[in-house]
Image 1 (cartoon, chains in turn red, green, yellow):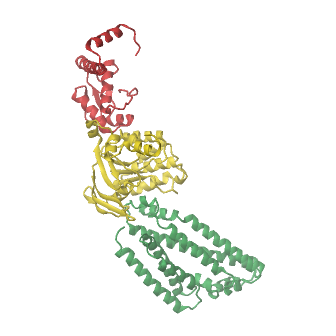
Image 2 (cartoon, chains in turn purple, blue, brown):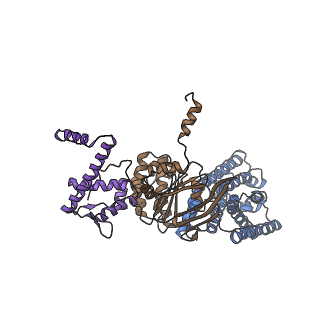
Image 3 (cartoon, chains in turn brown, green, orange):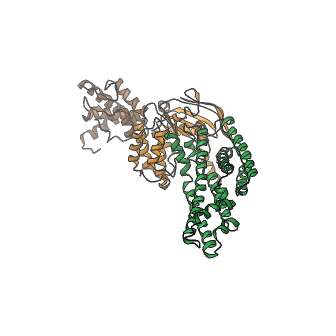
Length: 128
Length: 240
Length: 243
């Protein structure tokens, strides 16, 4: 069963989106694989201390994106193949990239300055 | 069935320890009085019970009043915070009232029984160890007491059926009116008639042998009150 | 569904509830928020028929009477249990009076909170009493569980544990109405927030709607209460010599 031990709730982002992101990052990292079982809605809501509707919303979105399949009863399983994993990766990457571009623009950087900054740090050994 | 039993237990456990305490008090007080009059003052048992100066009646009256107070204070399971739970039960208020009446009657009967038992024990001890120990007529002497002494006779009316009935009617009336009081108290009624009932019993309980008319009046009067209270409780009252 | 229609109550000359209209469908977890004396407790007690009131309150279409009141359970910081009885005796009593009583849930929760089954409840600590009160409310098997500030005096770990257990054991058809001051703590846990102020409902919103609007609960509440942020600054300005 997929573990939510490392899930940390943050302020600011709706919880269902945070759950979505947690799953997607797990998919990219390889810790969540095809066929893995998700906790039931009730169990996850109890684990995280959030309303079942919130979990329901997250699971429904995952289902809409074709990443999970829910059978009658409480069990849901990941449905992943190379294509979906690649899609999720590019989604998240694009999302992160958009975020970076926006914050750099907000700080008033020009495109050339942005590229220079990226080049500077790409080759260095940077600790996150 | 068990449902009603559990509510009965709830009513009882509110006051049962205090009532046992009162019975113990009665036994202790009577014991002290008996010791004083018989062993110290050598009054003789007939004089002791007959004269009325020995204050057994007073002790009984005090315990009676205290027991009434316990019943009234502790009898209402609808009051207080646990009342929030009782009021959510499916059991009807009328059923609860009946159980309260039953419990009250039980308490009075127990008081009655215990008082009679105490007197028996005093008599037995007296005739075994007292001045007349070994007197072959002592058994008869003992039963004579229940004819001669007004207090003892009222407690155990030998050969006077009317007095028995009067006792039962009094117990019934007290039980019913104090159970009904728990309802009336919530409507902020005055306690006057309740207290009059108790006072009357205290004053008139001690009847001599042959108080025919008094017993009839008691029976008649209290039956009327019982009828009125029952009608108000069970037929006219809306569910709370 | 519980429906309140134009419910009003006057208490000692004060209007405790004014024209309250509220529907509580099954399966929701609703937070009831309001300042002290706003009417949260009065509202719950009217639903439970513990107070007379004007207006109409129905449960699945019927007025609330001895016939259907078993579908409601109540947990309160005033403690409605029987102090002289032990938890064991409470279990026996509840089994007799409530067909829907869940022994499994009762035993499970008793174990989870580690409460002694054979001690008279009056001898419990305040925190334990609160826990026991809530255990009774949850184990009755009611469709609608009304909890009135059930955690007065419990520490935060206790409360967090409790919310999680509640979320884990509630069936989809069970409804919880929880009145509390602790808004931030319960904001993830509830699905709907109802605000009451001086006897009137001043807010009623589903958390998912707030989320869609990008608003958080505190912001919603502050706007519903017309909280003036500069009130603090104004007061300080008046009290000190700063400009």
